[in-house]
Length: 203
Image: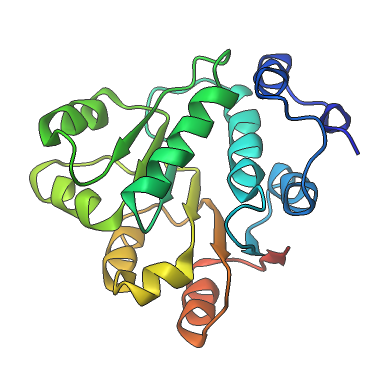
């Protein structure tokens, strides 16, 4: 299969061409059509399988159909390194699309992150602790969130982040598309998935 078979927006396809994406990995081939069709997706995938592209590509594609001026996608990551990698892929794949994103992570300028949130970027990529710190001082407007993505959920569990994740989820609108990626599926992750997802498709 070739990415061109997805019939993606030409601006997004240009980004894929730039980074040399030609054939989707198995997780991308499974996930992209499901997300484009509006399903919640529960994905079992290790790091290095192309899972970031599996959610970044369909999210960018859907957001390109209509421009809006508020935060539309929230991606939670267990570590700042992973958050930065996700943001770099959003920038590369969305280079021609005018999509805006920022990372809300520890070790970076708190004030600049607050300014980005106020400006209303399209995509927030955050670690749970730093996002909650921002929520304590800012009235973060999550009302326009259309996509919620929880990456490496099992690592979130191992690092003790699930209460923070649940606190953030409680602030999101009920009507949204959800994607949860986890290399393993312990019972606490299954429970979280069943609480937040509507008839998820598995990939």
